[in-house]
Amino acid sequence: MASDTWQNWAGTQSAAPRRFATPTNTRELSSLVAEAAARGQRVKAVGAGHSFTGVAVTDGVLVSLDNLSGIDSITPTDDGALVTVFAGTRLHALNDALWQRGYAMANLGDIDVQSLAGATSTGTHGTGARFGGIATQIRGIEIVLADGSVVTASADENVELFEAGRLGLGAIGIISKITLACVPRFTLRAIEEPDTLSHILDTLESDRLGLDHFEFYWFPHTDRVLTKSNTRLPGDTEPDPVGKVRAFVDDELLSNTLFEGVNRVATLAPAAIPRINNVSSRLLGAREFTDRSYRVFASSRRVKFKEMEYAIPREHVTETLHEIDRWMKKSGTNVAFPVEVRFAAADDLWLSTAHGRDTAYIAVHQYHRRPETEYFAAVEAIARAVDGRPHWGKMHNRTVDDLRPTYDRLDDFVAVRDKYDANRVFDNEYLRQVLGD
Image (cartoon, rainbow, N blue to C red; front, top):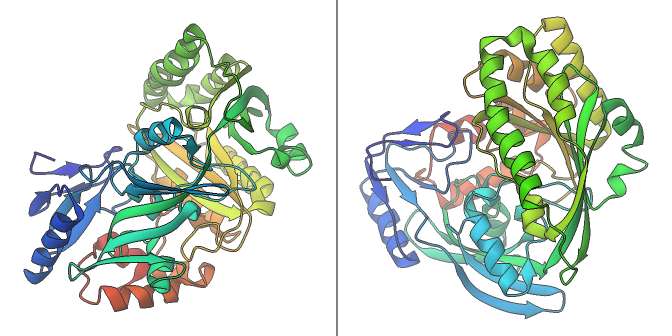
């Protein structure tokens, strides 16, 4: 934050704000918001910069929440604990701190570098047909509003602010604390193995979605996939992690170092991608291990990419993947990155991509040195045909007019925004795109 410009992790967004700010407590955050509003300046908060969209971009005051970090309080409950966490806490730090205290987050995504507020505000999710995204674990928020006032909200207090703010795109205010419903810590037994796409889709409803956490990666131009099946076990289960050598080979050498090299070759010779994918899909063999839940959920990803992800009704996952495959064959477009497929339970969050329906997530990626426009546009059109909803933190071209039909609480959200930020202190171009003026 020391330079004159800011850029997100993927390099898809940048900003040249009038001022960078790094408040160390809620009082400082409140004061800077009030001062900026009085001067007619916009204010946006940023966490780890892992969103691909411009959700955090501003030409006003860009607020880093890095100094608002750590656990504030823990209240034990019958089924876990209510844990209040400062909003800028990175997920990897929170997971470790929770484990040391006997707790864990009920579900996580596969990247843990985000801030807690950034992850929840953009609808970050993991996988598991019976589990919701991270924001479904929120039981309360402390939020700084456009006039600098600090307000707490929950299902029993300032209810409409809670409903809009827990997955709020940064449009309602800047969250300073989040209270999570955490569970007793647990381990995961992970089974990762190759399979075929045709077999996975044939057994998806009957077998795979009965697992606690299931996802798969389809290698385009092949019928091959890599599956990940995670089963929840008690926290005192003896760990049996991946050995250091195997971890280095699989997670460091193959998934990062070699994969970076593969994509550089693919950039120079796109015609070779089908053959490359056929080889790559056979390099990662089967493995089974048991470890702390958060260590299994998240993995290291250092190869830079651009990403679009769509949430579709779960019953449409097979036809959607087949349509993507048909488009690739017809267009002659070659894609080196696997297509990631995950699952989530229906929830009631107003702007959740899983609002009101059991959901399958289809994420497509493109190496950061290769063009993505045609590929992403085609997948977006295919997903929209089955009422797909774009991930708020990943690349898409949707606008408020075509989002409104798929979000029946979008107008309620906008009404809360109008009430608490009538002067659009927290506004930016991306919010005007997806929420209107």
